[in-house]
Length: 86
Image (cartoon, rainbow, N blue to C red; front, side, top):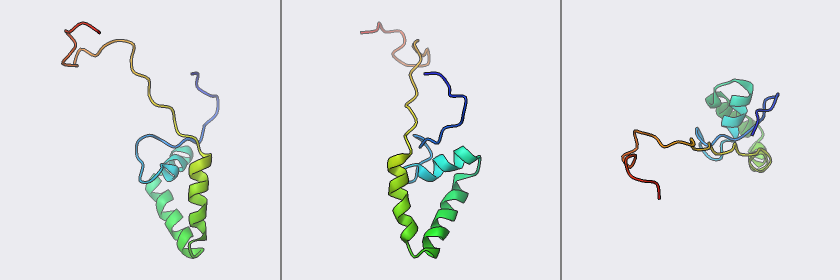
């Protein structure tokens, strides 16, 4: 897969609390995800919880980042490195 010439809003596989929505938004804008989570909690409190409906929508719309592909070679630090590949 080639890198896109633009930034993509993706939910990361790491740094998740629930689904990675706030973490993905934080990475997209270059902001600490904790600030996004706090802002979302304040926004949810100010709107009496109506903003909580946006989270599952964003969870569904924002794609998950692809899993990292393993290297094509075997790692010498792996304890099974000296064994033949089955």
